[in-house]
Image (cartoon, rainbow, N blue to C red; front, side, top):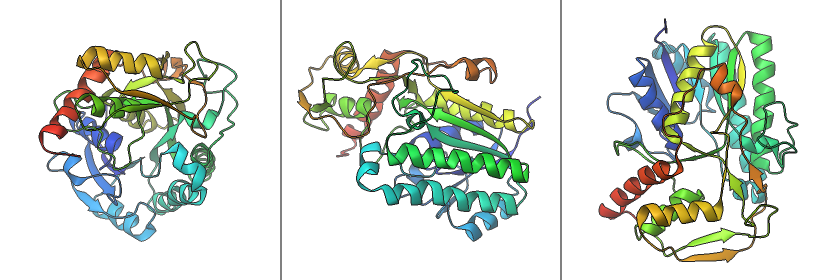
Length: 332
């Protein structure tokens, strides 16, 4: 039997965070959102959920929030996530990811919270030697983004061992799609995700799509990624929360176990939308490995995670509907 909990969701106004808040509600939990709204929006948070606008690295604010709302567990999404930006602004990434996480964990420890779910990334693997990538693969990140997330994983491990905090570390692969009901989707102010960019082009919100390099060591020369629907990822967080709340720890990849190249994704967007995209070829981006695909046995077997939307065309359909709704409302 699942115990219903009061859960602080740091970064709950963002893309993945807001979908997870919705999934928590549907599972009977009581989420509270803390977000500085630098990249999120209160409009993405389901109605009736308390929203505190503030910094997840503000120890006193976090402690006050944990106490006032009788919080029993924390899910941590807050941070910066753009690989290419991290190459040029590493200090920003260590501050927003590692330092903020350290402060958040200080508040968690001070308030006696024992369950913690952390939003990590496949970028901790760097350029892997084994594909699909098992969780035991050597972690050798090639970007400050990946390094700052790995540093937080180490920090969480040490804090957990020292203070009895059970933790789940979920290493995401490429997240895409939107709520099938149209209530929320990807609304980042800085847009770097391929499927969102391609869908924007398909609905007329941008002129075209640039492929960043076509000389990678892959069948068609473009990067291959494992795309996971955001609602499946949200459900993984709920499952992970319930797992750590039983006194267990886990590190797990979140992906479907197979990948698609950039060119394959763009062809699928053209097929689903019925629109021809204006595609150009640019230079490779710093920090992009050729292939990132998940070995996902651990999450499916230990967490019993059963994805509902493991279909690239469906992921694109939901993303297209979201972008079309933004276009209809005059968003640019």
